Image 1 (cartoon, rainbow, N blue to C red):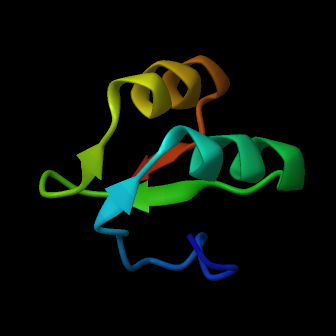
Image 2: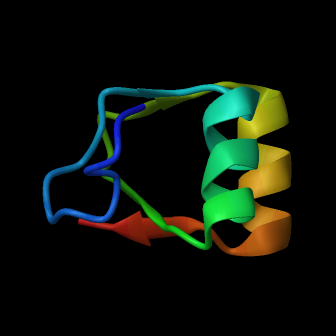
Length: 54
């Protein structure tokens, strides 16, 4: 994931490390129905509410 994680454009793939970085940096990750999110990333991301539907 890059520094533009808060843009309106959804990312294609999210792993647990992407979520950890977003939490540490106070960012949110734009996702959509086509975004592939690993199970560990989904659990952590939902717990910290870092996903934003784009």
